[in-house]
Length: 264
Image (tube, rainbow, N blue to C red; front, top):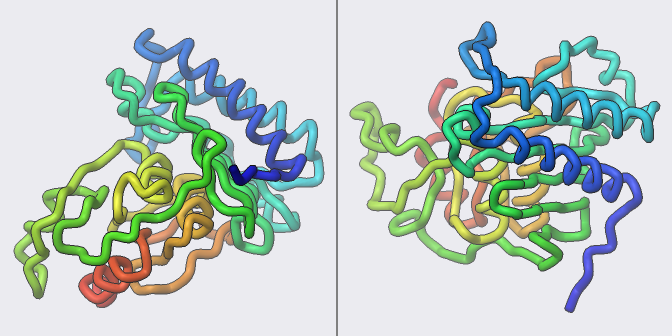
C-alpha cells in the first residue's frame, strides 16, 4: 500500500489541526456564543478559540512564516514572506452552529502564490484530507483520486442549486445531482476524493476558504480555476477570488464553456 511521506512542516500543521478539532467537538451542539461580522457572516467563540490555538502552535514553530487567517486582522506582513499559513479555523460556522456535520478546519502553506501543503479536517465525521505538492492527495492515510465521470449531464456536483435554473443562462443546464455543503473547503475535499464529480461557486471566496482545497483537487488529478479559466494565485494583496470551479478535466472543460463569459 502506498504511503504518504509528508514533510515535517506538514506534520506540524496536521498535529495542530487535530488539536483544533478537539476544541471544535467540545463546542459542537453546545450553543457557543456567536455574533455577526460586518459582512453578515457568523463567528462564534469556537472560531476564536481554534484560531488562537492554531496561531500559537504554528507561529511558535515557524516564526519566519507569514500568517493569513479569516479571524485575524491582516497586517500584510505576509506579503514579505516566502511561505505563509493560510487558515480558516472553522469553515462552515453556520452549519456548525446549526449542529450539522458540514464544517471543517482548513490550513494551507502557500509558497510563491501556490499551495504546497494543504489540510482539510472534518472532525465531526473523522475525515482527514491532506496533500503536499507532488505527493498526491490522501484521506485517512489512503490515496484518493478525482472522479473519472465523463459528462456534466448526470454528474454529482456541489453547488448552489437555484443558480442552475436562473433564466439568464444562454443554454439550459443538463440534469445533474446537485448537493451543497456549508463549508467550501469540505466541498473541495469531497471532490478531491471522488465522492462528488465537481464543485462550483460563482460568488466571492477568500484565500483561506479554498487554498487547501485547491491543492487537494489538483494533487488528486483534477483542475481548479476561476470561472474564466484563469489560474488562482494566493497570498496577494487582495485575498478575494470572484469564483472557483474544481473537477476532472472533461467536466471542468464543460463547465468553463458555460460560465467563462460571466462578469463576476
